[in-house]
Image 1 (cartoon, rainbow, N blue to C red):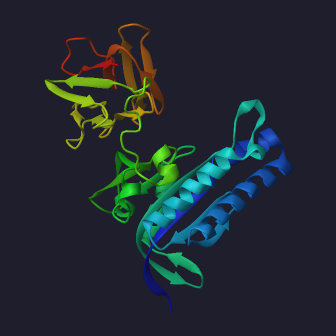
Image 2 (cartoon, rainbow, N blue to C red):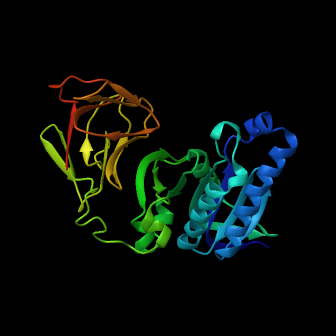
Image 3 (cartoon, helix red, strand yellow):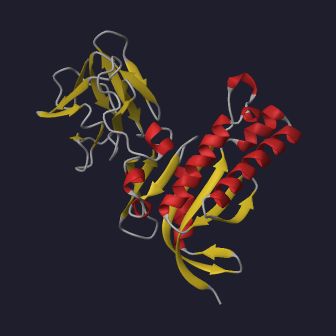
Amino acid sequence: MGKDIELAILFADVVGSTQLYEVLGDTRARETVASCIEIMQLATEQNNGTVIKTMGDEIMATFPDGDAALNAAAQMQKLIGDAKDLDIEGGAHVAIRIGCHFGPVVLENRDIFGSAVHTANRMTSQAKASQIIITEEVVRQLSPEWVQAVRQIDVAPIRGKSDELGLYEVLWQTEDVTSMVPTLNVTEGRADTPGTLRVVCQGKEVILDESKSSLTMGRSDDNDIVVKGNLISRIHARIEQDRNKYLLIDQSTNGTFVHQSEGEDLFVRRDSMQLTGDGILGLGRATEHDSPLAIHFSTKK
């Protein structure tokens, strides 16, 4: 008889493994995938987790809580990202994507079953290369140090339910996550501080500086900057402080148009770029300076 238990369920898989066989050939591709699986298993075991199964280029594992799952996930990403034997021709590197959810499962015959397993697997399909995507249920399990390293990036409908599921990205590459110790005022007095970023839309102003390091934009009322439109995603894009610069990170269907006062017009979709000087952002479409849909930004050192 199966045993009911609540666990953090994690899936991790190798991105583009089919292309690896075309680029590297069968033998080396198999060895490369096997190396990734070995790293995933090692990280799981070293962080109080259990490997439930491996499936080709994918691993499914469980952890007692969210912290253990994210410790393992970050370790997987770092080890695979640093492994020199996982370089591919042309300067590329093997990458993995990870998804995680916390919820009730049925444990039976060393396997797990239940809707929580499917939700965790869906988080993996939402992730891009080198990303860790988790649900709000995992966030609720986290220590304050890990909570500081997650950002909500989107919402997604749940099959068979009227509710929507919040999607969170784990910023595992930041220095704070590497040390797992919150760092305060690390840039005080340094010449390479990012300064401030001022964002204005429809009369609302948001300032990013040392006290507030990120903001979100989109049609959902939960965003810092709310812009309504049929081409605008619920959480369309975000701006984050990254060391000594500010990055625009688009996560939308229709992309973000960027007009910088000193430079060419750019289009960003499912990618990121640095914001400098002054300019205008258009969510889903290019906008004029005086349009109510225009998001004005300006940086200052």
